[in-house]
Image (tube, rainbow, N blue to C red; front, side, top):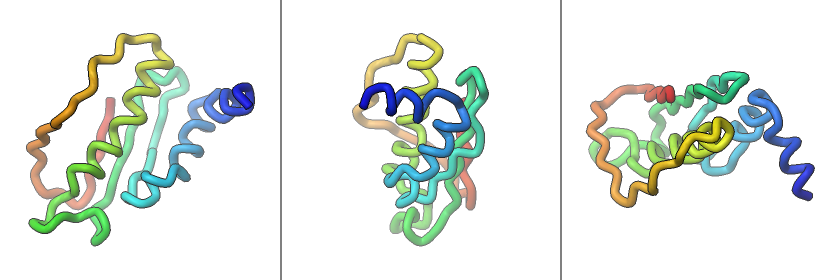
Length: 104
Protein backbone atom coordinates (compact mmCIF):
# COMPACT_ATOMS: atom_id res chain seq x y z
CA UNK A 1 0.00 0.00 0.00
CA UNK A 2 2.74 2.44 0.93
CA UNK A 3 4.57 1.85 -2.36
CA UNK A 4 1.38 2.52 -4.33
CA UNK A 5 0.85 5.82 -2.53
CA UNK A 6 4.45 6.82 -3.23
CA UNK A 7 3.90 6.11 -6.94
CA UNK A 8 0.90 8.44 -6.93
CA UNK A 9 3.11 11.31 -5.74
CA UNK A 10 6.36 10.31 -7.47
CA UNK A 11 6.34 13.10 -10.05
CA UNK A 12 5.05 16.65 -10.11
CA UNK A 13 2.56 15.82 -12.85
CA UNK A 14 1.18 12.86 -10.92
CA UNK A 15 0.81 14.98 -7.79
CA UNK A 16 -0.94 17.73 -9.77
CA UNK A 17 -3.39 15.25 -11.30
CA UNK A 18 -4.15 13.66 -7.90
CA UNK A 19 -4.66 17.00 -6.21
CA UNK A 20 -6.93 18.23 -9.00
CA UNK A 21 -9.32 15.38 -8.16
CA UNK A 22 -8.89 15.83 -4.36
CA UNK A 23 -12.37 16.17 -2.83
CA UNK A 24 -11.88 19.42 -0.88
CA UNK A 25 -10.29 21.03 -3.94
CA UNK A 26 -13.20 19.99 -6.14
CA UNK A 27 -15.70 21.27 -3.59
CA UNK A 28 -14.01 24.66 -3.27
CA UNK A 29 -13.30 25.08 -6.98
CA UNK A 30 -9.51 24.99 -6.52
CA UNK A 31 -7.28 24.14 -9.47
CA UNK A 32 -3.60 23.19 -9.25
CA UNK A 33 -2.25 25.00 -12.30
CA UNK A 34 1.43 24.10 -12.06
CA UNK A 35 3.95 22.24 -9.93
CA UNK A 36 7.63 22.54 -10.85
CA UNK A 37 9.44 19.29 -11.61
CA UNK A 38 11.72 19.79 -8.61
CA UNK A 39 8.75 20.74 -6.35
CA UNK A 40 10.32 24.15 -5.68
CA UNK A 41 7.25 26.14 -6.77
CA UNK A 42 3.56 25.55 -7.20
CA UNK A 43 0.69 27.63 -8.57
CA UNK A 44 -2.83 27.15 -7.27
CA UNK A 45 -5.88 29.15 -8.30
CA UNK A 46 -9.49 29.45 -7.22
CA UNK A 47 -12.13 31.22 -9.27
CA UNK A 48 -14.96 32.87 -7.41
CA UNK A 49 -18.24 30.96 -7.65
CA UNK A 50 -21.45 30.93 -5.65
CA UNK A 51 -20.23 27.93 -3.65
CA UNK A 52 -16.98 29.55 -2.44
CA UNK A 53 -18.27 33.08 -1.79
CA UNK A 54 -19.21 34.27 1.68
CA UNK A 55 -21.96 36.66 2.81
CA UNK A 56 -20.09 39.84 1.89
CA UNK A 57 -19.13 38.61 -1.60
CA UNK A 58 -15.50 37.62 -1.07
CA UNK A 59 -13.77 34.25 -1.14
CA UNK A 60 -14.39 32.13 1.96
CA UNK A 61 -11.41 32.04 4.32
CA UNK A 62 -11.65 28.28 4.76
CA UNK A 63 -11.44 27.77 1.01
CA UNK A 64 -8.37 30.01 0.84
CA UNK A 65 -6.70 28.14 3.67
CA UNK A 66 -7.50 24.71 2.20
CA UNK A 67 -6.15 25.92 -1.16
CA UNK A 68 -2.69 26.63 0.25
CA UNK A 69 -2.17 24.27 3.18
CA UNK A 70 -1.70 20.82 1.52
CA UNK A 71 0.52 22.05 -1.30
CA UNK A 72 2.71 24.16 0.96
CA UNK A 73 3.34 21.16 3.22
CA UNK A 74 4.02 18.81 0.29
CA UNK A 75 6.45 21.17 -1.47
CA UNK A 76 8.30 21.83 1.79
CA UNK A 77 8.48 18.10 2.56
CA UNK A 78 9.74 17.23 -0.93
CA UNK A 79 12.45 19.90 -0.69
CA UNK A 80 13.41 18.94 2.89
CA UNK A 81 12.77 22.45 4.15
CA UNK A 82 11.73 23.08 7.71
CA UNK A 83 7.96 23.32 8.00
CA UNK A 84 6.91 26.18 10.30
CA UNK A 85 4.36 25.53 13.02
CA UNK A 86 0.70 25.40 12.17
CA UNK A 87 -1.17 28.67 11.94
CA UNK A 88 -4.17 28.43 14.22
CA UNK A 89 -5.92 31.66 13.26
CA UNK A 90 -4.91 33.00 9.87
CA UNK A 91 -5.66 36.62 9.10
CA UNK A 92 -5.86 37.24 5.37
CA UNK A 93 -6.40 40.77 4.13
CA UNK A 94 -7.36 39.88 0.58
CA UNK A 95 -9.35 42.30 -1.58
CA UNK A 96 -12.18 41.07 -3.79
CA UNK A 97 -10.90 39.47 -6.99
CA UNK A 98 -12.69 37.02 -9.31
CA UNK A 99 -9.63 34.73 -9.36
CA UNK A 100 -7.07 34.23 -6.63
CA UNK A 101 -3.74 32.73 -7.60
CA UNK A 102 -1.12 31.64 -5.09
CA UNK A 103 2.49 30.94 -6.01
CA UNK A 104 5.01 29.68 -3.49
